[in-house]
Amino acid sequence: MRPPRRFEITEHPEIPLDGFVLGWIAMVPLLVCAVAAFHSDWAGMAIEAGRFWAAAISIFLAGVRRGLSFRTVGGPQPRQIAMMLWLFCGGIVAVVLPPRLSLGLLILLYLSLAIVDPRAARAGDVPLYFRRLRPPQMWAALLCLGVMLWQTSAVGAEVFAT
Image (cartoon, rainbow, N blue to C red; front, side, top):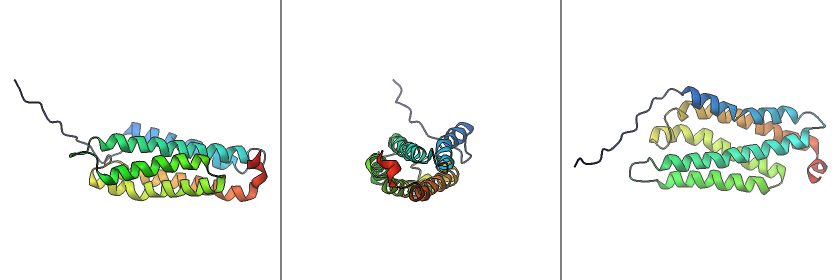
């Protein structure tokens, strides 16, 4: 009987087409919501939709992190579990917070991804291509979230109370 083969993960630093397309498509609703936040009739709904989408993406990325942690030699590392919990719990909390606080928390979540993912790629916690994909992707999201946060002042609290 043959001993089981160990498999080896090989990857390239180039961003694969599906990773590029799916990664950037996920940012499109944030862009649409940020632009719509300037329209007086749609601003409140756009900001709400944008923050819920951003929270959903954060929760999704927590699942991605958890799944990637299973491939770690020696099992998931505390830093991987911590990042997964930060993204998951932060996304859940962002759903229930008022809009300004929610958007502020989401900005922190996405900023952490822009900073941590390039380092995590070098450490082997995430695919190598995250080193190149995540910073511009997260900065685009941060710009959209910042616009929505700024527009919450222009919209006023009465729009979110209804």
